[in-house]
Amino acid sequence: MSESQSQQSRDDRVHAEHLAHHFATPTQQRESGKLGMWLFLATEVLLFGGLFCAYAVFRANHPEIFVYAHRYLDKTLGGVNTIILICSSLTMAWGVHAAQRGQQRRLVAMLALTLVFACGFLGIKYVEYEHKWKHGLLWGKRFQPTGLHEQSPDQSAEVHSLAAEPADARPSVAMSEGRSAIPPPAPGPAGLADADEQTEYPPGRPPNVHIFFGVYFLMTGLHGLHVIGGMIAIAWILVLSTRGRFSGAYFTPVDLVGLYWHLVDMIWIYLFPLLYLIH
Amino acid sequence: MNQTGSKLGVESVAHAGQPAGVHVVPLKVLVAVWAVLLVLTCLTVAATWIDLGGGNLWLAMVIATIKATLVALYFMHLRYDQPFYAVILLTALLFILLFVGLVLVDTGHYQHQLITWTEPAG
Image (cartoon, rainbow over all chains, first blue to last red):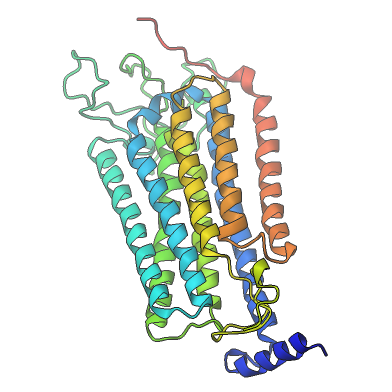
């Protein structure tokens, strides 16, 4: 064997304390962990992909809803959130770097910083959600906007109970006023609202704006849940790293949590322009 | 310490408790990628002030894809790893494209049935 090869197998044996019995070498163990995480990330891509597909269909069929409703979103807050997540990706990758180099204190600091950024992201999300809740900008039947600048002055205290079918009904058929051969649905306990043909919309607002908010809350809500899950994982390895668990010989959990966190960032990189930057 | 191969970032000899054969992304690269991501984010926002009609969406998606590629290649280490991980990611993305593409083709066939809404004048 050449010198570097024998050196490598010596090092592999030296670090065998981290080697589980069913793996031949630490390299194989490390790569197996990565493979598992990448397979999981592929399923996450597919999960969000389904939601992006719903977005694509609704936007392709009813662009006016998106053009109108996205103005309720604050671009600045969304942009700040994007920057926060990008910074958290840097600190996470830096943490992996520190773990690989055996720099424990820096690893702890980077993981803690990542958590701080993640909290900032959730804080801004909370502000956004609270604003929407307060103004009735919610999904489905709960879309009852109040107190917003786009009301015309002669409509005081606007509480429109929008004759909204549930978000999964096809809007183009249900609002038809007899143009469709499909008979109107019977009102049910779970809530098809009575179709109110006389509902007057404020001028300039297209029907079915609640669809945008259904899509918005589902996508950002699921993403937010993933952020929370990531924070739990990061907190866990933060605790382990304060106990000196990670080193250049064994940093796999940091690496894998990092991969997950970067995926969460990637998803937001797509969510931000699609939801906030509609022209 | 033997520095052979370390200019590629691959530590061929273990030191400081680090196993041989582990690639460490240099810090300079991480910070550079971060800076580029921030610039691209600002570009994405700035692009909304230019009216390209339908092109705005495509431009935003192109920039987002560049950002995602940078994150995948450098932060997620795909540039330095064995290609199979990239194959897994690309396969998932390919199926998403297939899924969304076919669904959009299907929904396109119903466009003429849509009751369109036009902004009222005034």
